[in-house]
Image (cartoon, rainbow over all chains, first blue to last red; front, side, top):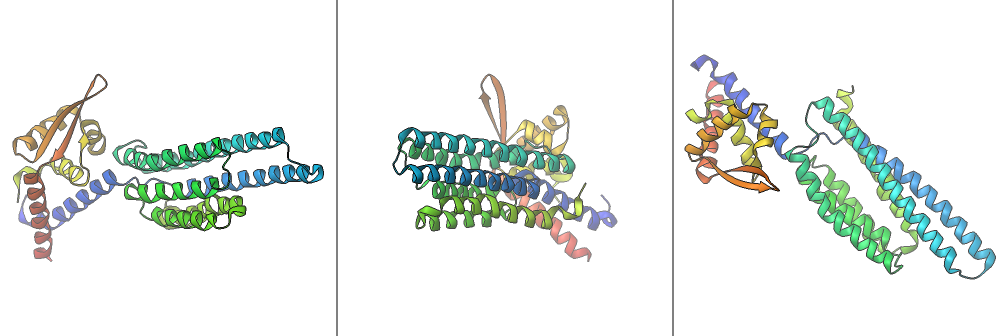
Length: 216
Length: 92
C-alpha cells in the first residue's frame, strides 16, 4: 500500500465492511410484490368466506333454528379455505422474493434469512397453536384478533433481520387486532383489512421505495 | 494499521462476526465467496491472533464449526475502523 492509494482504498474497505455487515445481518431481498400477492390472496379468501357466511345465515334465517351439522360444515369449509389461502399466499410471496434474490444474486437461504425465518416462526407457531386451541372449543370470536396480533408480533420480531420498515406494518396489525377485540362482529372485515389491504399497501410502498429502479 | 486486517477475507470474516453472535463455516464461505482451504487458513490466522473463538459442535452426525468474535478481536476491529476513518478525514 502506498500513501497515494490510501484514501480510495480506505473508503473501499469501509464500504466493503458495511456491505458485508448489512448482507449478513439483514435479509434485504424481501420483495414488495410478495406483500401485494399475499394481500390479494387474503382479499380473495375474505370474499369467499363472506359469501359462505352469507349462505349459512340465509339458510339459518329461513329455517329459523340452529342445526349442528350445518354449523360443523361451515366450520370445516372455513377452515379449509383458511389453509388454502395461507398456502397460496405463502407460495406467491415466496415466488417474488425468490425472484428478487436471484436478481440480486444473493442466496435465498443464508444466515440472515434463517434468522428472519426463526424470529418469525416463534410468535407465528405459538399463535397458530393458540388459534387451533380456540377452534377446538368453538371459540370463534377471537380468531381474527388473535391472528392479527400474533402476526403483528411476528413482524415486529422479524424486523430486526430484514427491512426495518416491516416493523410499522407489525404495529398496525397489532393495533388492528386489539381494536377488533372491541368489535367482535367485524372480525372478517378487520382480517381483510389487516391481511389484505395493509399487505397490498405495504407491498406497494416497499416496491416503490426499493425496487422501482431495479425492475428486471 | 493492523496487519491482520490487510486481507479482505480476514476483514470480511470479522465484519460478519461483529454483527452476528455466531456464524458457521458454510455461511462464511457463502458470503465471502472463497474456497474451503483459503477460508480455513485465514480463520486459523485470526484464531492464532486471539481475535476469534472456534466452537466445534455437531448437527446430527455432521460437524458444525461455528465462530464468534473475542473481546480482543472486537477492540482490534474497532481500532481498525477508527484508523480507516481518520485516514479518510486526513486525506480530504
